[in-house]
Each structure stands twice: as C-alpha cells, then as structure tokens.
Image 1 (cartoon, helix red, strand yellow):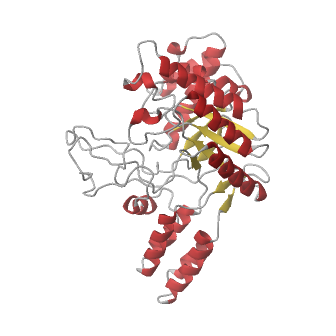
Image 2: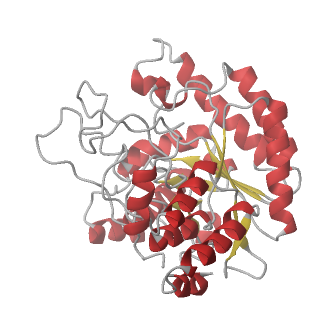
Image 3: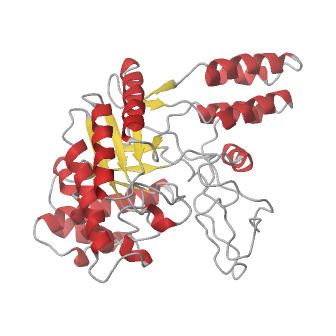
Length: 395
C-alpha cells in the first residue's frame, strides 16, 4: 500500500489520478483488514471510515496535497475500534452481527467499544446512554446476540469505572446510581465474557488519573475477576511506556488483592519504578497466565500528553482536542508483554473530543482559534495534525 503512494508523490500531474485510484479502492471499497503476526490467522479488523474523513482525503488529492492525502488514507486503513452507542437493541444487534460476520470472513478480530451505560460521562461532552438499568441490560443482550459465537474484543464502557456517578455529584446519599453502575458493568461482563470468542476488558481511565489503589477496588466491584482484564488510556495521550507500566501495576495489585491483600498497600504509578518493582517481587508470585490482562489505546499518543501553558487557562482541559498531538504506534496483538493482550486504536483518530473552551466563554477553542466540532464529529484540522506528527511516521 505504501509504495504506490510513495511513487505517486513524484509523478506530477499523474499523482492526482494515481492517488484517486488508491483512495477509491482503499476508502470507497468497504472495510479493510490489517494483518498481525501475533499468531497464525490473527488480524485486527478495520471498519469503514468516517465519510467526512473520506471526503477530506479526496479534497486533499484535488488540492495537490498528495502526502497529506496518503497519510490520511493510511490512517483510515489502520485497524480501529467500532464504537456502539445510542442505537436501539434491534439496530445494535444488526450492526454487531454485520461487523463480526465481516471480520470473521476475513479471519479478523473486531474491537467493539461499548458506550451506552446510563449517565455516561457524567452528562458532560459525551452525555447519553441508556435511560435506566433495564434498558441497558436489553441493549447488552442485543450486543451478545449480535456477536454470537464469533470473535470479538470488547472495550466495555470507557469512563464507566473511572468516572462514577458519585464522582460528579450525580448520586444520592445512599449511592444508588453508583451501585447501579457496578451492577450494569457486572451484567455486561457476565453476559459477554462467556461467549465463545469474546474477551471483555474493563475501564481504568488512564495513568494520569486514578492511582492503582484507587482504581483496583472499582475494577473488583465491576467484575474484573470474571472478565479477561481491563483497558487504559482510551481517548487519552499517555505514552506506551506509561500505559504498560500502569497496566502491570494494576494487574499485580489485583492478584495481590485476590490473595487477601489490601489495594491501599500496592505501589502506584508515581512510585520510583525500582521501589515499585521491589515491592512486586516481594509480594506478587502469581504467573501471568493467572493474572488479569490488559489492552491499551495508542491512537493519539505518539507525542505524549499535552501540557498547557502555565497559568494561561482557568481550566486547560488538556484531554480535549489538545494541539500538536500525533498518531501512536500501530495496533498489534503482539506486544511482547505476557500481561498485555493488545495495543489498539480505540479512540477513532480524527474525531473531535467536543467543544473545548478551556474555561473561557467561547465559542472558539482559544488554543486553536476555531470552534471545535461536537464530540464524535470529524475534525479535519486535528486529523492532519495526527497524521503529520505520527510517531512512528505513517509513510
């Protein structure tokens, strides 16, 4: 795929036609699949791209911006998660069945990001979800019917455990909504994990948020011991090294707690690593095969997190469409880490995080000088930043 692009960049007037053919085959011909060498026949699935992304790529070709067009096309051809939210049970069942069948025909594993839990995102930028627990259970049942016996990796409800109703003042004094959240996540685990080819991973936020001792009890209450494991860094920017270390600490702490230990005693991600490793060596003696595994999101972490200028904003919202970020390492099922099942592109790169005002009255994002698209809408400016700043480079 890359060599035709590279040759096309040097063909002057014929580059438009050459790239148009490649883009048409790549973007208009349906889903693609990228091979992985984790084990024979193991691949990650690439869904159909955002139609606005396809239009942007074609506009770049017409404008003679061949390298940007090629980079954007390469980004869209990289395996990414399929996000599922806001659809009726009948609609989500049909979509999941179509995706998993299409992936199965190609010998691929789809990543399904489920995002419909009641009260999601504390009613902020990505507000929505099912109206109540009963509605959510019916939705999860539909997802299960859609998967059937086919393979799937399920990223279960980003922010569901890192951002509980109790964390944002939505709950009552009895903690009713928080208890319901744990029950909803647990129901999804118990419904989906037993499916023949399905692996379910639970939410931990990211390494810059909860300490290990804070997130581990939440994972336990959410049913992580009945799941394949957990995920970290979805829609965030922390480095692969930080994510892998955080994952190892959480997995080790879960094993320690399972053996009767107290999560408050576990080392967290801010300990000196040598000290943390010494603690693990002394207290955790469970083989990796019996520990909770994890997956990470590298879709936008190529340049690491953004640090806002000191004192510039009342609320810098460093997670929200930060400037100058880049695509991270490509997805793979071969991580070299016995605890890490995959590095994935879970957040769809190029889709906006929402209207980022950074403590100002808006309507423009003061860091960008533009009005950012709504959460989930295509953001051409950010898409090009991610392509141009990719580490490792796309082309």
